[in-house]
Amino acid sequence: MPDANGQAKQEVAVLKLPDGKEHSIKVYRGTEGTEMFLDIRDLYAKTNAFTYDPGFSCTASCSSSITFIDGNEGICCYRGIPIEELCVKSNFIEVAFLLMTGELPNRNELKEFQKEIKANLLVHEKLKRMFESFRMDAHPMAIMVAVTGALSAFFSELDQSDPEFRWLATIRMVAKFPTLAALAYKTHLGEPAVWPQAKMGFAENFLHMMFATPLEEYKVNPIHAKAIDVFLILHADHEQNASTSTVRIAGSSQANPYACVAAGIASLWGPAHGGANEAVIKMFEEIGHKENIPTFLEKVKRKETRLMGFGHRVYKNFDPRAQQMHKLCHQVLNDLDVLDPHLELAMELERIALSDEYFKKRKLYPNVDFYSGIILRAIGIPTSMFTVMFAMARCVGWCSHWLEMHQEDQMRIGRPRQLYVGSTRREFVPMQERPGYADSPTEGESRASSKSVPGGGQNFMLEPHHPLAAASPGNASGARISEFIQGLARRESVTTSSFKKSVPDDTGASARKARTSESKTMSPRNQPLGSVEERKSQEQ
Image 1 (cartoon, one colour):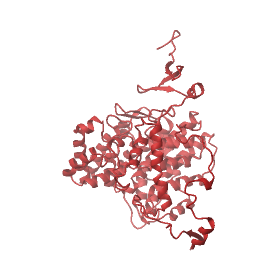
Image 2 (cartoon, rainbow, N blue to C red):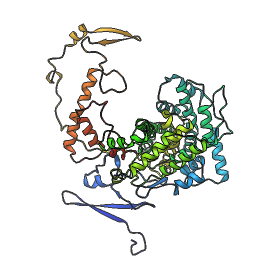
Image 3 (cartoon, one colour):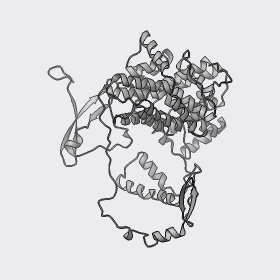
C-alpha cells in the first residue's frame, strides 16, 4: 500500500518475544510469487535471538534473479522465460548465455559465445595425465570432483575483482566440463582420450568424445544430440538447491571458482540430490514387471522401500521439468524405434500411483528424475555417468550464481549459526581418573605385546588380541572396520538421544535419522531406505 507521497509503504511484521518485548521485522516480496520474506538480519543484534531452521526449508539465503520456481503452480522459469518454451525454441548454449547474462543473445553475441566455448574445450596435457592415476573402477563423480578442483592449479589467476577474469573463468568451466566428463568415462573403460572437434556443437562434441575410438569413427545421431541438449536445458539451474547453495557458500569465502564448482559436484553426488535418476532405474529393475507394481507400492506404504522419482522438496503439484522429460522420453524412443520395457513400466507405475489416494494425499507426483534415466539409457549413457550428466548441465547454473554473487555484491561470507545441545560447562578429567583406565595396558606392556608388520617402508603396530580389521555387519562397501571404529559408531545413539531431549518436536531429517539410529531390530544393511515422505526432502 502506498504512503501519502505515493511511495510503496514498507511492510512490517511484529515478533513478540517470551519476555514480552516486540521486534519489528521488514517484509519483502519478490517480483514473482506470493511468498513473504522476513528480514531478520538485525534480529540477533537487537533481541539476542536466532531462528532455527534445519535444512533451510524456510530460509532465503540470498536474493537472485536467475531462476523462479512456484512449487504450488508447477512453474519453473529461467530469467523469466518458462522452461517449456526454452526446451522447444532454444538450445543449451543459448540458455547458458541467458542464465549467465540475464538476456537472450543476439545473433552476433551467440556466435561469439560459441566461439569462446570452442576455444576453451581442451584441457592441459598434465591434467589429462591426472586421469591415468585413477583406478578403472573409480566412480566418475569421484574423478570429476578431483579434476575439477585441480583446474585451480592450472588457472590460478585469482583477481576476482576483475569482471573479465570472472567471465573467463566461468566460460572455461562450462567449456571444459564435457571434456572432463568424457575423459572420466574413458578412464573407466581404459580407452584412450578422444578430443573435441571445432565443427561440432556442444552436445555433439560430448557424444563424440564419449563413444568414438581411434579405431572407429562415431557418427553422432542427431536424435541423440537433441535429447542431450534438452536434458541439459532441463537440468541447467533450479534455484537454491543443495549443490548451488554449496557453490555459493564456498564462493562467499572468495575461494577459487573451480574449487567452488568442485564443491558443488561433491554435493550433487549425494544420492538424495543428483543420484536419484540412477536410483529410479534400479527401482524399475527391482520391480521387474507391471504385475509386480501393486505389491511394490504396498511395500512403499509400509515404509519397507522407497518410491524413487516421486515427490519434491519444492513442487507440491507437478514438476514442469518432468512433463517435458516425459514428452522427450516418448519422442526419443519412438524416433529411435526402441522398445524399452522400463518405459512401459514407468507409465504404468505413474498411472497407478497417481490414482492411489495414499500418494495423492501426500501430493507425490513424478519429478524430473523419473523419466530421465530411461532417455539416457536409450542414448547409451551408462548409469554410472547419470550424475555426471546432471553436473554437466548444472555447471552453467553454478557459474551463473557465482557470477551473480559478485555482480550483486552478495559476497558476505556464509556463516550459519547453531542450536547447541551438547554438554554444559565441565572440568577436564585427567587420564587416570577416566572410566576404563585401570583395565588399559601400560605403554610398556603395549609395546612388549605388539609386533611389527613391515609395509611400504613403514612399521604398523598390531595388537595380537585387537585385530586391525574386524568385519562389520553393517558395512555394505566390504571395507574392513576395526573394533575401535565400531565402538565409536555405537556411541551415536547416545548423541541422538541427547538431541531428541533438547528438540523433542523436530520432524525433519534429524528426527528421521534419530528413529533409524535407535532401531535395534534390523542391521544397518537390512534397514529400509526410508519412507516415501522422506523422498519429498530430495532436491534437484
